[in-house]
Length: 87
Image 1: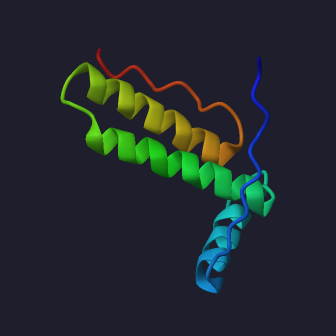
Image 2: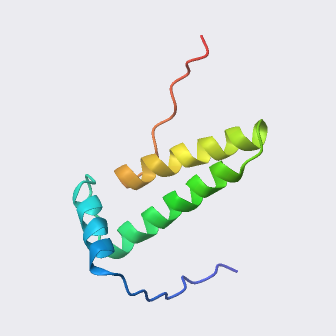
């Protein structure tokens, strides 16, 4: 069974709301404030997971997820694939 989204109300200090608004105006698709906040929360959680990852496979998986979230948050779409720099 698919879960419904949870309603979550949040009061923000004016400076934080201004920062979110500035960020969303810098994103090509100019998301609504709620969508911008969701993207930034996901980005923050991915960054946190990366800082907590163990060296090796966990770290690479967390790095990949973080880069994917950065692309999604900036573009509003799936992130482009990372270039292969192994050769």
